[in-house]
Image (cartoon, rainbow, N blue to C red; front, side, top):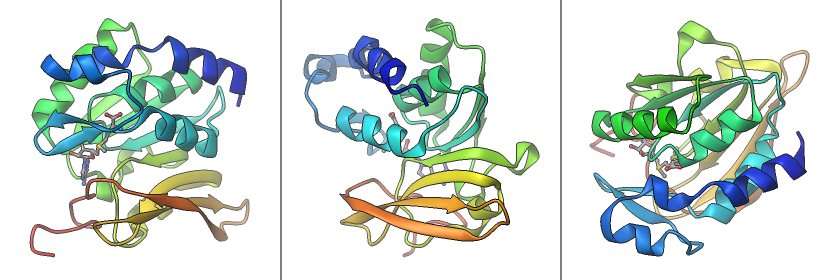
Length: 197
Ligand code: SAM
């Protein structure tokens, strides 16, 4: 990954474009902000950190789970060949899609649905970025990661999780490393938290 290009685009991308109303005033803060429906846009420094960990290449096919505002999606789309992004809340997805089209991206594919199951149709993916927290590593996402691929995902209890980098080696063996504590909204769905947990 070209780190200089990532940092240049990160500085260029205006976060206020991805939030609404009064939140635009706070867009420059390095804090998560509400985007409606009980969801948040992540803290910019964490978006940058997670993108560096994921390390997408110019020819990477990326799966993103949790489109949210589309902010992280824009950065992934700038740094890779194609991004497949899944969001469970239709209203958030519609707004994110409009923003990303306005920015001129034509390499992003959108799906409303349960991203804890991945997006089987286009698997395997070279990179998987999960921007909501799972209780355990979702099997379906591991299955859809290409050999030699990388996945970044917060895993742990609801109030505080660990940021994990999952690497699938060339022969398919899985390696898991931890990169500090984070706090994300829940990954809901069949391989995430159910409404009843
Ligand atoms: N990366 C986003 C951004 O830059 O704005 C922020 C993502 S927000 C922290 C987490 C998102 O994951 C929410 O929009 C939430 O609706 C979504 N989400 C939670 N569970 C999901 C699931 N099973 N499938 C798809 N999206 C899910």
